Amino acid sequence: MQCSEDEEQRDFEQMALRPPSGIAAMSANGTPVEDGESDPDDWRIAPEFLGIFIIETAAFPNPVSFNSSFEILISINSFQAVNGLRIFAFQQPSQMGAALIQETGPLNIGVRSIRLSPQQFASSTGTGNVGDLYRIIIYDGRGDVISYGDVQIE
Image 1 (tube, rainbow, N blue to C red):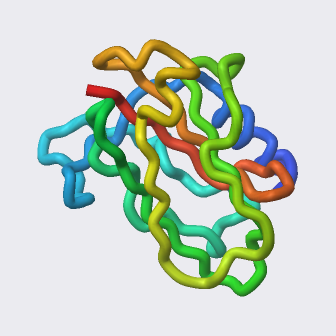
Image 2 (image 1 turned 120 degrees about the horizontal axis):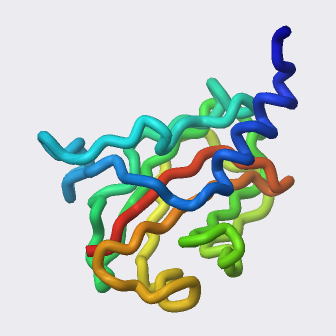
């Protein structure tokens, strides 16, 4: 029995709403840390957005200092294929607060940087303690999950 794309998307969204569970360790210049932690679940693209939305560079640096910021480089490959962008963070799904970034309207084709600071979400959704993991979820404007990954505060 084969899953439909809708079922695959729903399964992906259910995985996105699990607690964070590891990181893809990245250096400050956006390269994987040699012998660093790897999480193959992080920063995959939802079935609905394959070929349209690409994570060019996973969250970096990761781990990140509470008083610093991290970036995620994304690429949109199809004109008006992604309408709106909302980004959330949580330690536990029940603790998801307000959107950290919220954009409306079609997203332009090309590469762009999403920059976030743990100060934006760690103080409101948890303690912000060293070692704390947070799940970052990227949604489109309709509320469909595009991608997700975890960051660690150091």
